Image (cartoon, rainbow, N blue to C red; front, top):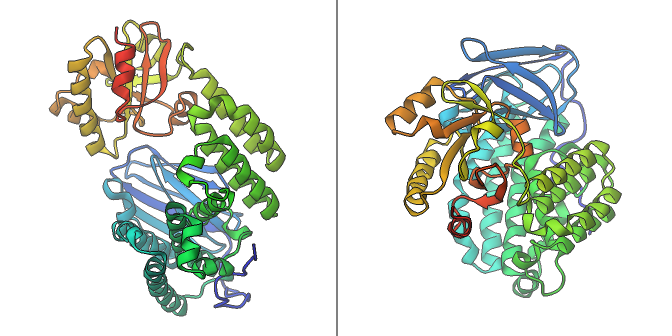
Length: 460
């Protein structure tokens, strides 16, 4: 693979900062309708700081020595990327009822972050249209993508002319639109087949020549990582192999690790990609018996001790969630804000656990409709809803209006601990236990057609 140099060289690597730029970084904001009491700041997949909201749902903190880079702020369960550089004084405001669309930055350093959000939202709005274009041949599909890319490039050039961006900020803000469109082309090829596309359009993959497959500054930037993973998917396919069949196999994921090993020399990027592939392999619960073989190869490619511990911990949690094991103990909160052990709260009757979020109330309502259908068909179970955030009075009021039985509703007290122990990776997860808390199904999908079969098989 020819390693491109990326992004059209629209700038030279010279400093754009002024000598008058103050030291340090200020970060603050306000969360309307908060879903938790804190905001967390991450860099390179590591938690750097936790900021507690005050009575007005605001937070602020000054930092003397934050390094330049891409950060992620999280107000659980929502999160977004932001760029922080020395001298930034950034304030943001958002409403959890529409987190992304309402997110606005102000202050020094706001322009580059507002541009990231504008690009993100624009790409989201294009999703339905682009999904309809996958039926086109590769030549026409490529033209559609190129047209949209050119439009974003024009907007970026205008944005760049009005703002004094540092060289690294230029790389990141361009990558925010270049790699999502490159990703679309890779996804199209995965769906239609690489050989077929080359027959239709021999120049289809020429866009790869302008991309950088070892970009240190983008090692933790979501659009870049998403692209790289789909590039790895394409390269790991054997001749004539279907992606949708191969992607569920351990051999395929080992081949992806081998490509990372051969292609990526930058440690941060190499390890982050290997970590992502490891998560995809382990979360494929059907491959559980093959995981040890995968992990033996993973530890030869990954050089981060922290990631090894993280992935091995996930494997241990998967082991504990297997059928006939006792459901791991966590702390739950009932609707009166009293804390209880899951061991005592969930024993006494065969129980189905389902999950919901305060930021997705439409999902919760649909889940309640599904619960009613299950209750009619399988009345021998107790159906318990678990909110992934601690309770508040608004949730209490909603449950009263919807006439939801509070005795069958709990909430996580510590999401990080609970989600790790119960391996909660999707809100649609369904867990089935017997009257003694022994797991009958640890990795069900509450909405999947086969979940009824699981309930039927274990029907008390």
